[in-house]
Amino acid sequence: MNRNNILRRSVYVLTIFITGTLFCSSCSKPEVTIKDTFKDYFLIGGALNAEQILGIDSLAQTVLIKHFNSVTAENAMKWERIHPEPDQYNFELADSLVALGVRNGMFVIGHTLVWHHQTPNWVFEDSLGNPVTRDVLLQRMKDHIFTVVGRYKGRINGWDLVNEALTEDGQLRNSKWYEIIGEDYIQKAFEFAHEADPEAELYYNDYNIENPGKREGALKLLKSLQESGAKIDGVGIQAHWHLDFPELSDIDTSASQFGALGLKVMYTELDVNVLPRPENLTGAEISQNFELNQQMNPFPETLPDSMQEKLSEHYATLFKIFLKHSDYVSRVTLWGIQDGQSWLNNWPVQGRTNYPLLFDRNYQPKPAYYAIIKTAEK
Image 1 (cartoon, rainbow, N blue to C red):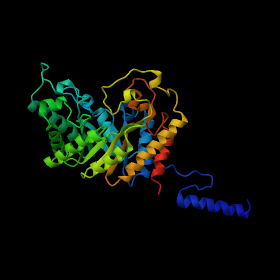
Image 2 (cartoon, rainbow, N blue to C red):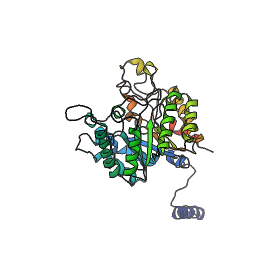
Image 3 (cartoon, helix red, strand yellow):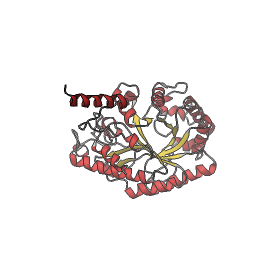
Image 4 (tube, rainbow, N blue to C red):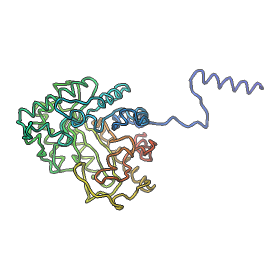
């Protein structure tokens, strides 16, 4: 080996020794993750299903830990899963989700405590199937909240406490919670949750509240909670959106108006539906279902490049709005890690193939992933 080669090799070895890094002109740059890209602006969350939580689908946890700094369970903490019978609690999935988040330094979200869907009938009925009294239902709500929130005190950072309490015209939904307790059931839920864990953040969470009519109702509800002295820290805009819905101006205006209340604004269940909307459906009412046909399922094998481009452009536009309002936007959570997991494959049409997220079915970043990263470049 000649002297020049010896010199070059010495420099090479010394560089590795000092820095621990191999440098070369052909090496690619380290992959930029979305959580690092937006770390100075807001949290990036992901939602996990049961197989992902338990590690049966282990790749999901790998991607979650690498790319996200907040985590939510899709279903594991909903009443029917965690408290199916009066004297039965199933904590295995929820415990695993919380342990995963805490172990990896994530902001853990509890979802959800008070909702009209996925709540067993026994909650609202006596042994004969008759509606219980206000006092009985309030006690059942309190016991549930104290048990669940109390179990994760100091480990779950924020709760989607009350979910979807408003109709599309901004009025309080005529749910069993409302029918039996009255309109103050929401205030009571916030009181109970704050008492169970005074440090946890508490949110009202709903879909379509970026749209003018429902937004006015949400603003009224949030103001009334604040005036009552309830501890409410933020509002969750679910963000189950479509390529052509809602109006971007409504997303922008709603962020400003909710932020003006002094609340944190979160996009808690973000996905972008690229498939046709039956009857121009909007929102996320899970009771709505339509028949599967070819027109409703135009991309059963793969998403065409032209649609990938539209999806990328739309995600980039959304994140520009989020960044514009980053003074009060505190979190953006994707409702799923990869396309195959998304609830939109089966709602509102069972059996479709949808492509609403940032990672494809093989957990590979899609063009939309790189598009949102560019929005944060200075």
